[in-house]
Amino acid sequence: MKIEIEYEASWRNSFLDGSNNEPLPKNGRKYIASSTNLAKSENYVKRDVTLSTVMGILNRLIGDQRKLYQAKNDENYYFKNIEKFTTFFDIPKAENSEIVYLRNMLGNTDQNSFTGMINTDDELLTSDYSKELWNVLALDFNELVNFIVNATTVEKEMLLDPIAISDRFAEIGKFKAVDPSNEVLQALAVLDTKFEGTNYKNNKELIVPLNLYCSALYLQIERLSKSYDLSSALTKSGSIAGISKRLFTKKDFMNRFTTGEKKKIFGNPYIAKSFVQGEGQVTSKLTKVNGHLEIILDIDREKARELEQLIENAGVSSFYLGKKGLAYVAHIDTREES
Image (tube, rainbow, N blue to C red):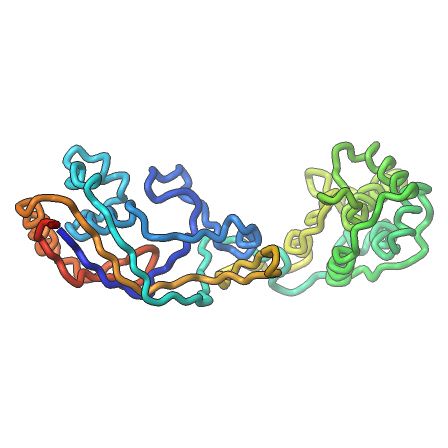
């Protein structure tokens, strides 16, 4: 028996981890098509037509809309003794890459954005300790190292404004990682005694300046606490919102100073960029394929006619092949293969 299927614009990428051929996890399959996830090459997942795809189509054609693993677990699974006699030929006729915009309904928030008006009349910016605290960010890297090691007084000044502080962190984040010189190692030794277990290096064992600036703020908080009450600067966990010992997160930092909620992400283009040796940076988009699928079932004529009748009774005019697209049965031949 041969079932011929024509399809157009079949999506050949997956936006979820795991497999559709196994029970769903308790919280569902994880969405991996956000901009953040696509930064990791393993989250750009290609899909081709497989035997599972074909069996899913056959079940759909006879009116069974359950997941394939659910249908297979049924004692009366129609294709139980047919699947092993099933082969297929996928014949792509045209393939193209397109940019599609995916809606993200998870309620995630943009790390670098905020909403509402900005309040600069906040204790974190107007208290007696505020200048001495934030002025640490005004130091250049060598001055910062000296400040950490020798507890020097900070002479430079930082504008006490949330946007200015955020912009300074963005500027610091662009500083190149540096070799661990003797002076820098001394600074690390000081920080290690205060914040044990904090990593200040990247995967090349170079020192990341941003990490030191973040820890330096907490070092300054400890030093200033001898003279000031800094309870208004800290959260219940004893930290500055949006600033850890290593990193700065704009959305969490600005949340304290804005009248609106964190800005939600409603979607992103499906684009993955990766570096391929010999080619450089490669941009991957959603793949769509037009083609022809032939499904061959090595069954007797009587069983073939029974299956054809089930397909006719179900009356499925069109269906998805893959994530999206349009597919339909073009021809059914119940003759046995010669």
